[in-house]
Length: 229
Image 1: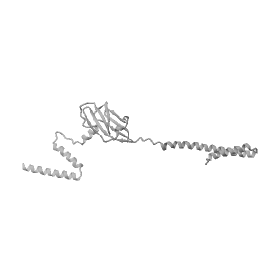
Image 2: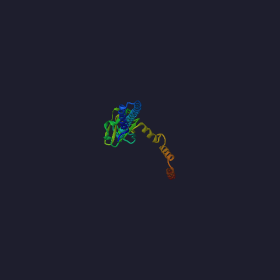
Image 3: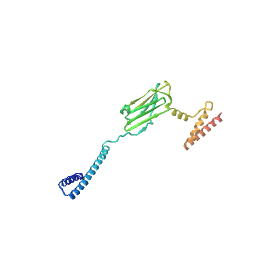
Image 4: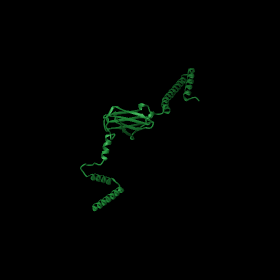
């Protein structure tokens, strides 16, 4: 079945043939006017066709080419660490990390921090930033190792043979705040009383009843011992 454009082109050819054979001015004028109209319609049809083609072309790649997936970044919060005389070692478990390209596992060190970035692991990025390390490290001598499902960060101690009790300064400060403060010159029992008082204040009703019972029993026992002597 012929398209509208093809039909118009055939009409134009017929008009041209008749126009060549026609000698009467009135008929020639009418045919010339009709010829112009057909030519205009043909031009418009061709323009419409040329405009639709790029639109189809632009839609085609979207249908066949899958969009690039950059993934999102997951913050790493679970890790373990230990130390030797020379290194502090941080262990991060990431399933399949040994299968990604080497350049996808990046670590940036400063004297008191490190920044781990694992790119495109199972469609996601993984990030771990540790600031305020407890003690300075040697940037040049620090490195990373990738094992099966594990990344190991090796922070070279600037001061070898020194023990790190905590990984970061923040962790140290938090732990020390949790410890009860004892004054060497005060009665040790006073420090214990302070601890029990804090537990009592922070505890629920069951905890308070338990402490009260223990307190009464302790007082009764002490009273019995005093009367015996």
